Length: 120
Image 1 (cartoon, rainbow, N blue to C red):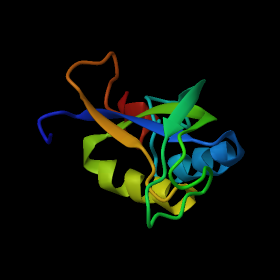
Image 2: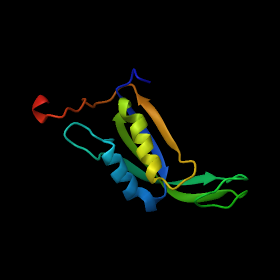
Image 3: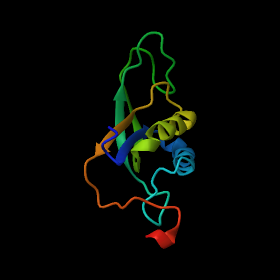
Image 4: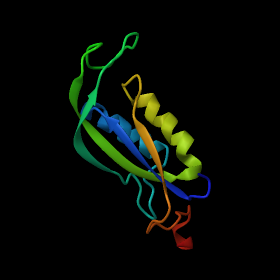
């Protein structure tokens, strides 16, 4: 994956934890695009799952299929910061097994961000 400069993360999370996630992503510098930071998008989705024996679900009942409202959060980050970003997400995510998809971005309209705006 190191051949790709950017990745997109898809994170599924209860709406109650969105602001915590947003802050964690900002602190990890995910969503930094040019002269903007904290760039992300989210949409409401329905998550379906069945907790199996031995798990400790945040919501749902062992052995029963659950359908719950969630947010799907999408954010772009530098590939070199993916591990840092995932660790930040896990620190604030309430689920025992959070869904965090990392998708390498072959091409984007993004320009690499630089610390000094005069470099742009």
